[in-house]
Image 1 (cartoon, rainbow, N blue to C red):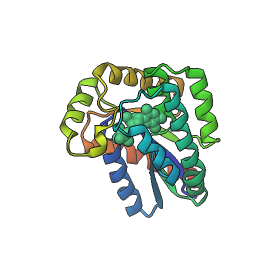
Image 2 (tube, helix red, strand yellow):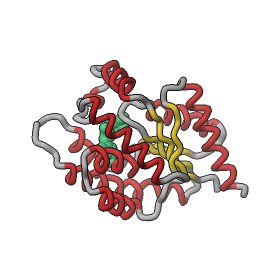
Image 3 (spheres, rainbow, N blue to C red):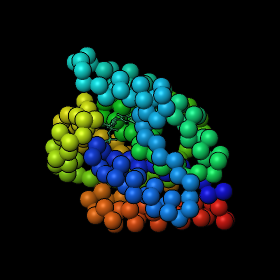
Length: 217
Ligand code: TYD
C-alpha cells in the first residue's frame, strides 16, 4: 500500500497551500489517491473551532493555553476522523500544518509550557506520527512582505495571527528551528525562498522516494 502522511509547516505565508495544491495534482497524475487536509479544521467540529480561533470579530484576548486546547481538539477530530481512515485505505495524506505548529506557535512563541504542550499534542495525534514534516523556512522580512501583499486578497489572511508583529514571526521561526533539532529524522528544513517549481520538485522527490520505499521495501 502506497500510503504516507506528509506535512508542510512554516510561518504564515510560507507557501504551504500553494505547494500542497501542486503536490496533490502531481501525485494524483501518477495514480496515487491523495487526501488533503489542513489544521485547524478539516471536520465539521474542527471547522467550527477554526472559525473561533481565527475570528477577528471581537477583541477578547485568547489565552495561549486556550489556544493550545482548541488547536488540539480540532487536531484530534481530524486525525481520528479523516487522517487515520485515509491512511488505512492506502491514501497519501498531505497536511497543511500539524502538531509541530502548536509547538512553534503556542509553546515557543506564546510561552505555553513546552513539555505539557508536547505531551498533549502526542496524545491528540494518538500515534499517527507524520512520515515526514517539511518546514518551509522563509525570513521574517519575507513573511512580512508576503502577508502585506496578500492582505485584502484573501479574507482569512486577515487573521489575528497574520496581524502580529515581526517579533512574533521571529519567535515562531525560532520555534520551528528548535523543533527541527528536537525531531531530526522527522523534520526537514526547505529553503522557502527558492522558486515554487524548485520547492515542488524537492518535496515531490522526497515524498515519492518515501512512498515507493514503503510500498516496495
Ligand atoms: P491559516 O489562515 O490557515 O494560516 P496559514 O495559511 O499560515 O496556515 O491560519 C492558521 C493560523 O493558526 C496560523 O497563523 C498558525 C496558527 N496555528 C497555531 O497557532 N497553532 C496550531 O497548532 C496551528 C495548527 C495553527
